[in-house]
Each structure stands twice: as structure tokens, then as C-alpha cells.
Image (cartoon, rainbow, N blue to C red; front, side, top):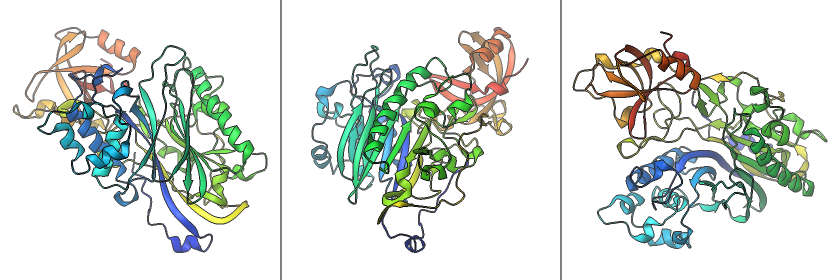
Length: 503
């Protein structure tokens, strides 16, 4: 996946010949992959104190901040639509006054508070994840944010919500509310005032399992909650400025990608579509999915089974194309994939979060972002004219492949005996490993070369994995290539489904 660079220094003098913008601002959508606090109360096994501690949180905060600093010349996006923030399970230890907390510790960095020589006080142990993030961003001198946090509850199905959503914004928050959904996190609605104009921002994190027909009915319900609220807003004002963002756990082309699903949440219920000019037609669609701004082969922000996915999405209403209030800046939608930072320089895939070495990596998703501006004309009957507008209502059925360049994998057998390849710095990198099967449950390999030792082999597709493992017994010699990773303390090499040896 290449980096989609956008000239942030937009030629405002040229824009001014059409409309005098009062402000240009950036909106980013980012699944940060489980930003959890350290109070020791977690619904996920990986985030218990024995495996996740202050050092991990400090590193996680720093890495999220490093990604956000790639926007706006280091100042971060003006609006950040974030998902996978821990829903704090100990509300009695939350910070009641965030501004007072940040002021109290303004002279001490978050890392020092977390990992300094002094023991963590009960107050610091109880700080929720989103407050720690605000602290880190303040430490890194990003302009201050306000935070709107999604409310969570015991779901009627009995499922306890482990994660919530957060909107960080530099604009005043006029109103915020959470719309409950069955079987998933609530949908956070935040109304902002941008230079006197109202902007509705929705933060979604729908039920997981994009390709699973069994979970699509839950997403249908998630989408209906959002659609009902959107209809209510548009009935009151058909040209309302609304941004829908988040991790929808659906592909932008869900209906085409999974034809076995009779109805899809994204395309049938929410009515996401890709004809940009149709927004201007009377009685036409009211939403445009910004993934259609990019060529087909550049649509992707996450990888699953060697295919690019588009679970992170941003959709806009027709009001963001008129000359009243807020307007989408044409062709500014892009993917925040930064090689050498959150994108692996060889595979171009996301460098996901890992626990090894006190924590490393970023997220299993790239952020997406777009730019907007305020306009002062007040014309609701004039429309911006996009350059090379998308006229394709639906996306292609085929997934965009995300092949691994295994030909560039480091051959472990050729490494010197004193060079260890199983290190945190190598997680996500490609290795060719040969050796003897030492166990089959789990499937382990006694490694040839390097410092020796063992590695767990893994294949994500259950059928392919069963066939491959079933062909081998203890003592067999095999050679495979894949990504180095770590899972629950075990080093592993994850073999791409398509690269599993046939013999």
C-alpha cells in the first residue's frame, strides 16, 4: 500500500477565487487497536497486569501520538474519530475534571508518570485511557483537544462492552449523545460548532466479522440505528453537514464483496454509495462514501487473509457539497500509511501493536483522513464541482490483494549463530525459516540457524491450516516463509494462506 500524500499547503489564493474560506480543517478516522488503561480491570486477557503494564501504555500513547502528528504539519487532525478505546470498567476511579488533571501534571510527562521511579499513585492507576491520550498529546505540544466519550452499558444480549469510541476535537462541543445498539458498541453523535456552523459527527464501531453472514444481522441493526437518526436530521435540514466515520466492520463494497448476504448493513440499510454527483440530484442519494475518491487498487486500510479491507470509513452528506456552512475539499480523502512508521517498509502493511519488548507497533488499521473548509456564501442551492468525480454507484466484487514479498524474506538459516531474529524490532518482518517439527499441538519448529530455539507456525485459514499441519509429524523437516509475530508470549511465524507449502 503506497502512501497517499496530499498537499496540505492548499493554494488558498486559487480557492479564494471561488469562495472565501474562513477555515480549513482535517478530520481523521483511526482505530488505535485497544488503547487500554492500567487499572488491572480488563475484559481482555491480554490486558491483565501480568502482560500489560505502565511501560506498554506509555509506548502505546507515544505511538498513537506519532501517527496523529503526521497531520497538519505536526499539530494533529482538528477532529479525530477514534475507536477501540477501553470502556473503563472502574468508573469510581475516573478523572472527573480532565482539565484540572492536565493542569496538575502539566510539568511531568506521561511516560514519567507511568514509568518513573516513584510508584503509581491510586489516582494515576485509575486514570482512564482517553485521559492518558489527552495527556500524551498535550505533552507532545499538539493543540489542546476536547473529548467526547461514548457511553457504554450492559448490552441487552448480556454482552459487556469492552471498548468505546472517542471524538477528539478542537471545536466547541454543542451536544453529544450515544445511540445504543444491540450486540455492539453504541454510536456516538457529537454536534460541533465550527466558526458558527453546526457539524454533526458520528463515530461508529459496528459488530465485528465483516465477511461472516452470521454476524451481518447484528450490523444490520447497528446500521438501522444510524440510518434512523440520520433521517431525523435530514428531515429537519436536507442540507445538514454530517460526517459519518469509524470502524464499520464492513467493506465499503460489502454487498458486492459478499453476495451470499441477502442484505448488507453498509449498502442496503445505510445506503452508502459512490456516485458523487448524484448527491446534487433532487430525490437522489444523501450519502457519498469517500473510498470512491481513490482508484480501486488503492482502497484499503487493513489486511485480512492477504486482502486489503476498508473497515475504516468516512461518509459525507450532500450538505458538505453546498456553499453553506462546511464543505468537503475535493479529492483530499487519503489513507495515512507512513512507511517506516505505521506501515512496514517492505510489505506496506500496517505495523500492528505487539506486547513484546515492553510494547511496539501501532495498529492493525491505517487511519483515513480528509479535509474540509467553512464557506461564508450561505448558498444552499449552489454546489461545488468535483474534479474527476466518481460516478460508480457500487464497488467491484473483487478484493484488492495484499501479497507479501516473500522473495525478500530474511533466511534465518543463513544468519550467524549469535544473531537472534526473534526480537521486538523484527515483528512484522518477513523470514524464511527451516527446521524440524518438534511438536504438533501447538505446531512448533526447532529452528536451524540464528541462536536456535523454537518457533510456533501459524496459518490463519482453518482449512488450510488443518491440511498443512495434518501432513506433518514430529521429526519432519520443513521450510516456510512468513511474518514474525508474538502471541501470548510465544514467538510465531504466520504463513500467508497462499504461501503454505503444498508438500
